[in-house]
Length: 366
Image 1 (cartoon, rainbow, N blue to C red):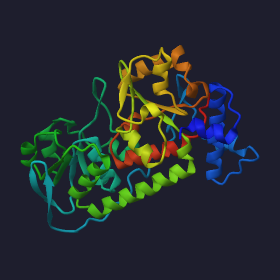
Image 2: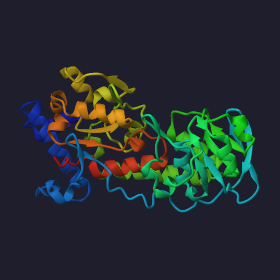
Image 3: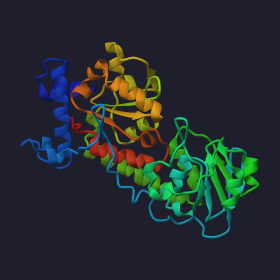
Image 4: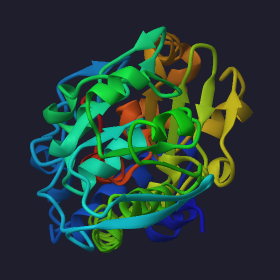
């Protein structure tokens, strides 16, 4: 049942679309307060102390996660399935013999680095490719913590430097098919390039297998699902319809159920606007009601694809058409970290859940 119908039945006093929107936002806040054992009869669910606020905004939308604590982003080392010897790991190009408990790891993409972090092996990373944003390389995603920022670079995804990798003397090279020439890399060290899979959870499990930590990987996934359910309950997620948008340099990408953010929100029970319950799609203008309805939601989370995306996104967010959106006029639009919300990995998924926990049923600072 659409959220608007829930509000109408519970309040029975909806008069028009604008009034319904404000009533809906109030109901969401009260429901979240009940879920966290805060009494809603005395209005305490609306007071400032119960709403997480940020201090920096972009085009009127609060920036989420500026105070994120990454000191424990990568946990303590997990235990290997076997302490010594080697194991056979299947890959799209054949089986590979790798150390059962690798000690010197070179990582070829962010998803693999996220997995190494999640399994507590970040201190074993001897080198990693550096992501590309805009016109060139950038730093490792901040959500992975400071330790990952100082890992030596071995090129960029798809353009690895084999000589630099060799100089790091790895006993395992880990990445995804297409990150580099598997034959050349295997001339340096045992190399596992997992197959490309639309499921980030399946990819994480494949990385965990390659690292000799199938058991630890399964536990991490189970713990993630428990956390997602807890976040959903604490935020009354089933009463929220969250819109997720990503700006690139020329248009607005609506993140559907097939996106990373869409999948994580589904795990937490967050509902999506009707137009976003399917594959991702693009809108090029917000100058009609039909187009605005495609991006509307009880809350809108936006991200920027590099510097060009930020420039274009700010242009859209300063426009009169953007300001006609109900979530914007209700101060319920939020800017989120692109490396998290458009990421691929369990550490990113946990960070996304933290953002939902703090902001799903909050008002922006306005």
